[in-house]
Amino acid sequence: MTVPRASAAKLALLKRHARRAAAHAYAPYSEFAVGAAVLTDSGEIFAGANVENASYGLSMCAERNAVQQAVSHGARGIAAVVVFTPTSEPTPPCGACRQVLAEFGGDTLIVCCGAGGKVRRHRLADLLPHAFGRGNLDPARPPSSLRRSPRRP
Image 1 (cartoon, rainbow, N blue to C red):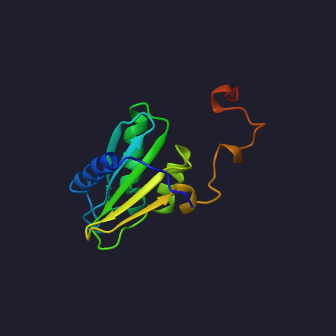
Image 2 (tube, rainbow, N blue to C red; image 1 turned 30 degrees about the horizontal axis):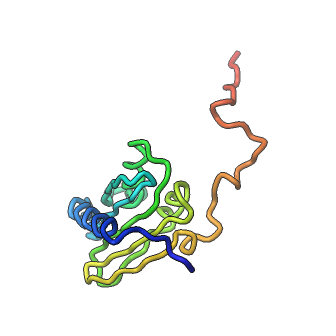
Image 3 (spheres, rainbow, N blue to C red; image 1 turned 120 degrees about the vertical axis):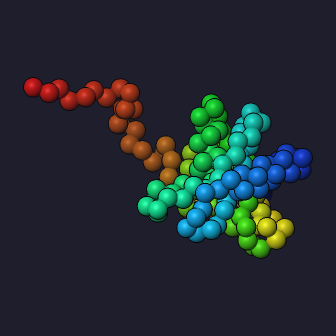
């Protein structure tokens, strides 16, 4: 397994952004404040925190919030992600976050940091082998922008 590389300086900066984002998490139910920072293919950094909701299914993870920030600013590729959790052992992204990350980079570097100082590095492809992607979609189906709405009488 070859883990993608990012410079030590860039990773240190990503860790600071992720830790700072965790301080802004809204986690009144789990009390599990997570922060994430993504490094885009163009070198920009975007951070996000988890935001919980009393209707648990509407909660949003830090990693997906960071990706959405990046995409909202024009990014289409994610080179690296740092996830900070308030645990002694580093916590990897959940399955939903892995799938969203796979949309923007299958060989993304994932660095998981815990409050205890431990760090784990992974390749996204190792955490999510056989991810669902564009290649799984029906090639005969035209993109939604080319489909016509049914006519109403």
